[in-house]
Image (cartoon, rainbow, N blue to C red; front, side, top):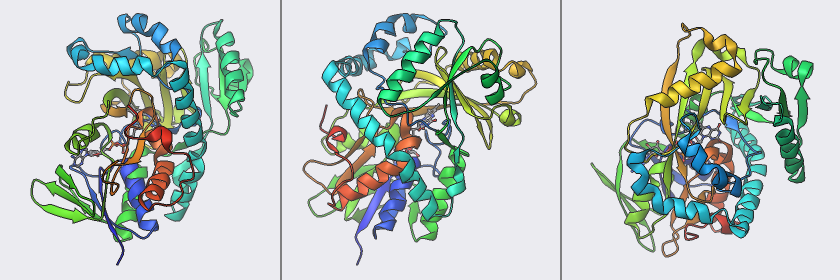
Length: 413
Ligand SMILES: Cc1cc2nc3c(=O)[nH]c(=O)nc-3n(C[C@H](O)[C@H](O)[C@H](O)COP(=O)(O)OP(=O)(O)OC[C@H]3O[C@@H](n4cnc5c(N)ncnc54)[C@H](O)[C@@H]3O)c2cc1C
């Protein structure tokens, strides 16, 4: 009989792991307190950001941190009500910017991201949903005149890491993205970049394939995990179950479950915001990121999605309204057509699961290896979900992993 596995969390990471576990012959039960794909995996930008290999904690961020925090238009926010809670995390975040750990995180991100697109292609092809991933290209733009220096410097740095871009200006920029405001002066074009058609639809496709292949979904909150050497008990408000393996993929909520099994990880909820404008989806041809304003806009099937903000505010504070205003302000500066007040738009806030070194945890419990972990994908959970799933199930089945896993250890903090 095949071995059984429970996966806790039906976000893009849990869903990808569930499918990969089925492919490798495991009998899978997926738990989520909500319908699948309604956590951070619902409202993200859907961009496969392979080129994001610089950890959030780096000397540049640290140098700018105070002025960013004091600037009301900054993409970085630390609500005063949460300051006392975040202090220990901030110390770890600063330590992660030291030369050695920074180099290690950068290398691990590079390897994970490099493998991510092919892993998605394998996963989506296998379930007949290849069209959910689109080679759309990406533009990283600058408005200031001196932005050209930053663009050239960034281009050279990316080239060193094997990522090719084209510097575009003037007529070429206008040809690529005609709706952008004239004040946008320079851009780096990433012709090889991919996006998904729509993050929620992607999760629905993964979930449908999982169910069609005999997967079981239990919509209940997991309240207790009890590991032993041979199996893991999973308890919900209504029932108790037992599995050969259990995998925690609970995104920003993973820390509480880990605490129950004797592990503490400095996992924070890094809050991000979005606006979605259903009738403005055709305004852009590519995802466009602003290097100076630090936000991203992209055309998805559900409309134009505008995302941004990095707010270290935990899991309980309500969304802060002025963050949506800031996204509105920035997007209208870059896309003047959005100045029509009548354009309908929805607002959303979600929780990125973020560790101080910008790397996920993909690992097994040091004492109970049948209990596994895949969470903490911060800004890159959609990008890294399929490769995480492959690596995680390799580990679970004690096979040789295709990447060195030491940087993703659960005990590294
Ligand atoms: C504004 C914004 C924009 C983003 N843009 C991008 C992007 O363009 N590209 C990219 O790669 N990434 C992006 N991200 C990051 C990405 O969305 C996340 O990293 C990713 O969705 C995390 O997926 P996950 O499955 O780990 O977590 P989630 O999607 O949050 O799923 C966790 C699930 O666990 C469930 N759960 C938690 N605790 C329990 C429990 N005790 N019992 C049962 N169920 C439980 C929750 O209900 C939830 O469904 C963005 C994030 C935000 C907020």
